Length: 320
Image 1 (cartoon, helix red, strand yellow):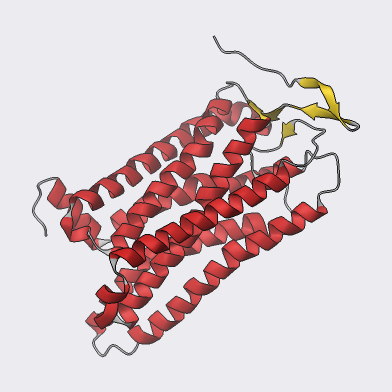
Image 2 (tube, one colour; image 1 turned 90 degrees about the vertical axis):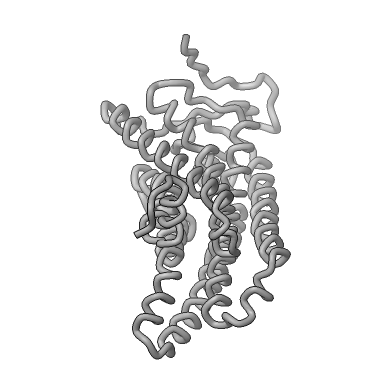
């Protein structure tokens, strides 16, 4: 039996504001009869994402040929992407088939915390992967010394720590606000849609969100850009065409994921406030919550020869 919980107002009041204890997602209600189609499409994409990332983590852990810093970072990224999708997509899918669309304030804060944590962790893991490619191509003789196991673990730990710190800062600042409305114009508890429910002016929170977005998006993008400028200048100095092609091939997968990931996140969090309609905002959100996590396993399995060879070895087939 499906139970539909309506918004409840607590009889207590905080100042002149009713104490809100529950929010309701509006989700894709504007799509009407197309919601079932969206459910089928998103479920298929979600299943592919989970399966793809599980395959990548498994194949990297069991194939000794992939026990290198590059694939260590890739397995961490795939693990992080898996949890990242688990935070938002199951609830979105359930709302598309008419199940409970309400969420407690504590549940909303928890969802936002994990969404921000793993979203930012992914950004900095991609930066670490860019640094790894820079060292491999620009300083190959010292690669094994610089990218040792301790350094790799520290880079991953740093990425996770930044994610946790930013998430605690953002969630604390948002949920200290008094809320007067209950309808979240989104399919999960993202920062801006929840802030719009506040009774008071949120300019300070908006400024904080922009500052944090710049620090966690523009700074990593800048570092990756500098890495690739140095990488490309080094590759162009390689005398043989075959050598240049091989060097470019090792970076192509990472660069593809970086462009889509940072591009979507920048559009979502660096654009001016209220520039897009609700449907446009949700379309952008679908891109970075559904499409981008799927891109990682697709790109690294279809474009990466070492991963494809590892899959062939795992299935007992002969390498071409």
